[in-house]
Length: 183
Picture: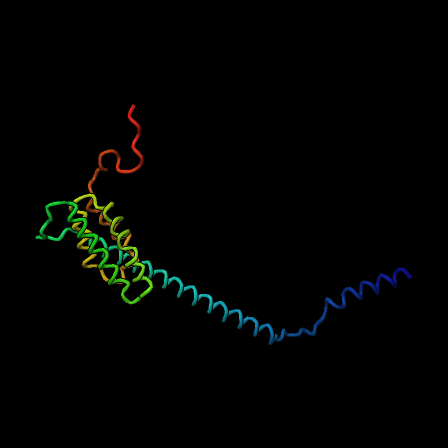
């Protein structure tokens, strides 16, 4: 009985292994559909990634062009008549700044109202940055010639002009901060 049961077990194990009726795998319609959907999704993702990269590159190029244009605007024009006093030159730069802001925000009544309301504060802030005659003349030139769409970049215009045309060394006393008490 033992031999018979061993032979039956061996036969049962060998029979499925010797299957001579090989079936060719039939393509599964659902698997093909899923693969096609995945390929389409991958294609859409790649297209969105390329569009996003192109947009980022265009924004970067536009920012570089804007910075280059601002740098070109911040110059002292040749042959310009210089005022005798620095205060007069700074006042002219402040007036040019307000006119520039009016031009920049002419199509937006809400922002234009804000410009008019804060004109004195804007001008006072600019007068603090006005460290030399060259800075004042450069700021006036930049504000007079800057395109109207540079309105939001006004702080960049001021920063570039002050850095480019300002004095190489800080004013006496360090320029900022509270002076120390004499001992």
